Image 1 (spheres, helix red, strand yellow):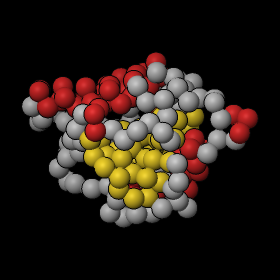
Image 2 (tube, one colour; image 1 turned 180 degrees about the vertical axis):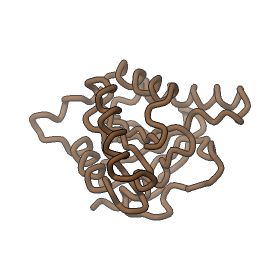
Image 3 (cartoon, one colour; image 1 turned 90 degrees about the vertical axis):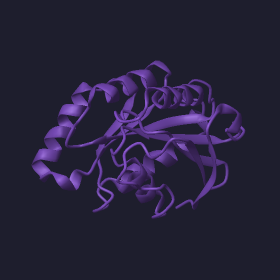
Image 4 (cartoon, one colour; image 1 turned 135 degrees about the horizontal axis):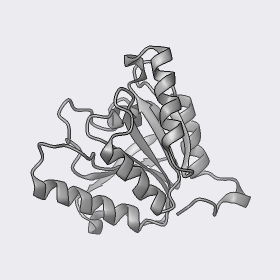
Length: 202
């Protein structure tokens, strides 16, 4: 498994590292378990800061993930208590990254399994689809529901999403459910077969 290490944070596009390697980005609604998912997938418990305060991630955080690869932690969206100017700045930062990052191979969207796809999640999925970005949806906190309930949510979500979603995976940072599947998808994006290296790069 690649070793993940913090590289840098950026508050504006001028702070982004050079677009000279493959990247996979994580994004999700505030308090959807995004930071916990990053830590679970990388096996680094304290890589991404986990906070009980929604909206804590206000910067784009870049992590190296083995030679020539990066993981990117994007600001959480949908934190109602943030000031409008702050929310607008977050959106601008996301737009700057997602719209002009040729090295971006795919995007992981974290969704709280208890809530499914909410309005802002649907907008995020539609936006990624319009940019031609392959998506992995992680239905986080799957341990909070029974197996039957979680499976029903997964089936419902899978039926709603566009073709750009490569998988809908039940995920729990607590129990490890879905961690291997998510990690495998990351590596398929970051290290595609030679013949398909140009496919789905956005």
